[in-house]
Amino acid sequence: MGIGSLMRRDDAAGSILAARLCGKIDFKVFDAGTTPENYLGKIIRENPDNVIVIDAVDFGGSAGEYRVLEGTDAKTANLFSTHNTSISMVIGYLQENLRADIIILAIQPQSVAFGEALSPEVSGALSELEEWFYGAVKKEG
Image 1 (cartoon, rainbow, N blue to C red):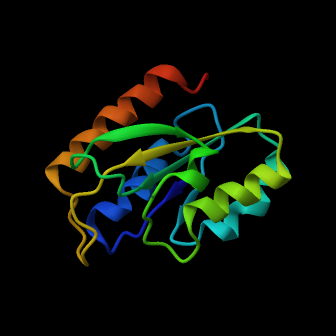
Image 2 (cartoon, rainbow, N blue to C red; image 1 turned 180 degrees about the vertical axis):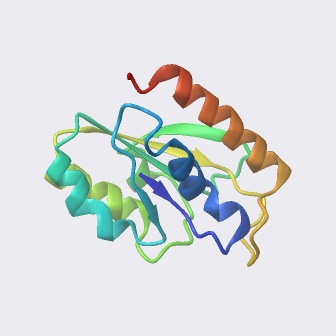
Image 3 (spheres, rainbow, N blue to C red; image 1 turned 90 degrees about the horizontal axis):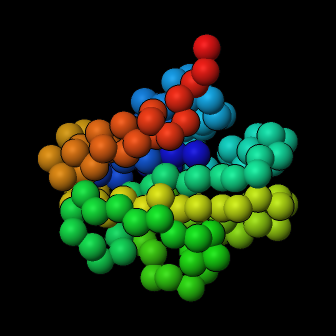
């Protein structure tokens, strides 16, 4: 599930990556935009073994840096998200309703100010992550 606002520069990272991957890998992909709470029921109905939540998260890293965090880290880490529902609430709800491993792919934004252009650092990270996903989970067909 990709999360992000297309109107807040690097905050769009999760949403953009999900849109790029949708239909191109052999897993269900949701672009939840700024309302991940609207997709929780859909994810739960899929009953997945694993959930990857992709979001621009300020974890104090360098712009474009990304980290893989366990879902349990969302409750203890000082993660800042710009969405209506916090990432820790989304993860908590999924944990209560699924027996899935939940992973957060956190991408450090440079700017979440209003605007549509990604920073070069985040754009480069998305290209790298996109290629990784294609190589790791290509759609068979």
